[in-house]
Image (tube, rainbow, N blue to C red; front, side, top):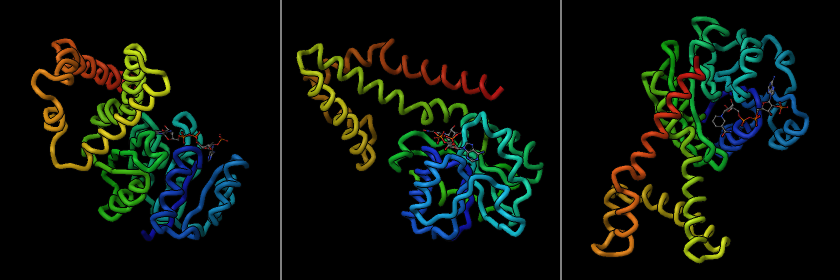
Length: 269
Ligand SMILES: NC(=O)c1ccc[n+]([C@@H]2O[C@H](COP(=O)([O-])OP(=O)(O)OC[C@H]3O[C@@H](n4cnc5c(N)ncnc54)[C@H](OP(=O)(O)O)[C@@H]3O)[C@@H](O)[C@H]2O)c1
């Protein structure tokens, strides 16, 4: 990947992206990080990347292709305008939850090329999925560059309608929490069925991770895989009759995702 990148904020997500870029072959000399935390800046320095505590030190001749905002959403309002005059007509990529493209256009100017994206927590182990939306100023090559930069932390999907970001947030943004809850519930159910906490947790965790990996790797759909392990009159069928009853898991999941999407719309204001 060839790109001059400026990363603003190198916390959990920013450092995951940085590690991913370096692993993908982006040259350390092409990356600049702005990070005020001395402790975090120290860790970044170990990678041979330029680290600044403040954008004032960037200099007027500083040129970049992409600026990635990986700071907390509530900090964006004060931080983003500091980068509005950087040379090179960069694409601005935000990973800030809930911040719409118009928010960045207001702070950076109407002509700014803005990509709003929503990654999720498995990005921390490079197994995330980021969904991205580009405003009308983003050129084809910039979109490709954003895909490359976001793929450093997992898969990337694009949407053409920014309104879909609320549903995306409800499915993949909040989704890891639903899966963690599934692991907790399966563990608790195992304990109530007589297993030790340690064994029940090991079984639940490994089953969720293994089933997810299997579903990713084989061509069959999740529904087909479920049917394959459900023998008529068997143990799985006995359990699925409860999970798939009329007000079972599908009803709960549909309600949960609808509630999260509604909250996402409310927070975007
Ligand atoms: N974590 C996730 O799983 C996740 C998932 C989806 C989206 N996101 C989004 O990703 C963004 C970052 O989240 P995070 O979990 O990585 O947060 P984080 O760990 O708090 O990282 C933010 C970093 O930005 C630094 N910072 C503060 N002020 C700055 C400034 N003026 N210039 C440059 N850097 C500054 C912070 O330093 P200090 O600690 O010293 O303040 C911190 O190191 C958020 O907008 C969040 O919505 C996160």
